[in-house]
Amino acid sequence: MSRPAASAFLAAMLAAAAAAPSAYAQQGVLNLYSARHYQTDEALYADFTRQTGIRINRIEAGDEALLERLRNEGANSPADVILLVDAARLWKAQIDGMFQPVASPVLNQRIPPTLRSKDDGKGSEWFGISTRARVIVYNKAKVDPALVQTYEDLARPELKGKVCTRSGAHPYMLSLIGALSEHLGAQRAEQWASGVVANFARSPRGGDTDQIRAVATGECGVALTNTYYLVRLMRSDKPADREVAERVGVAMPNQKSFGTHVNISGAAVARNAPNRANAVRFLEYLASDSAQAYLADGNNEWPAVASVRVRNRELESLGKFRADDLAIASIGRAQVTAARIIDRVGWR
Image (cartoon, rainbow, N blue to C red; front, side, top):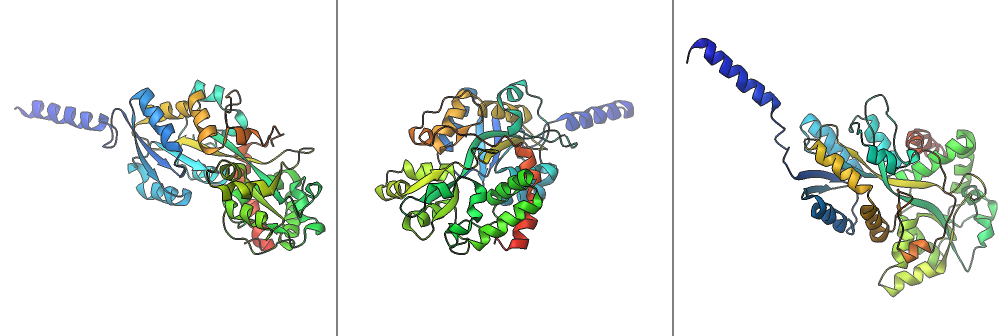
């Protein structure tokens, strides 16, 4: 081969290599990093594969573990889609540049603006796929429900020694406290948080289900929980779980003001997704009627798409309520203020 011909051949090979897809790019494959650890999601993934023929490779871990993995993998990450739980975590991943923009008329039409992010200047966005409310549960035999009609009520002197919560540093609590700081202002939110701490029945510990059980046994008078934990107990095949649920009442807070705090599970296309088209297709699937029904029926979450009908009797039994329409993205940003508040008041 002559020198000019060899040079042309080498140039063609280099161009082909540059244009070649990532080693992780495979037709008919989706690499999913998920912080959702719900067994019921198996049916969701199987349905997507059945409809599209796209096989899902899944890695499940806690939100922080997944985000740390993504940081370490950098541009070589195989992740196509990232599923996270809670606005605070989605916001952190977004500002760290772990997502990419998605130009999808389907998602823009199906997912309400309050349940998705706006372009943050880095071309990064995410979409809420399901919602859950953070409600107050109370011991029916020991607490008058009139005392717990707002989040602010948890700081009332009448509830001294009766309030239980999980750690204020948990993202569920950071999001709630952040939302209250948006509504009340940081100073009033801190005064409220100090009042809640003064009303603790015990130091914060355990998860939301632990709080519900403590209210049912009378160790606590009232507690905060995400709705799907309560509905899970209501739907349990264990009589002891159902008895716990029967012993507690539920208050949807702030129905006469800004509404009950709502949080989300959210999905995004990873910054360096090797199978981008499949990733967008999966996000659009998550916004479909069938997927939204899976989320409601399987994990006791409300659909992000308002038109989807819920066929979950126990979830529906919580009734219709006014949800806080504060943009989820602003709740994520407010976690910085929330973190300062919990530090200052000792909500640990």
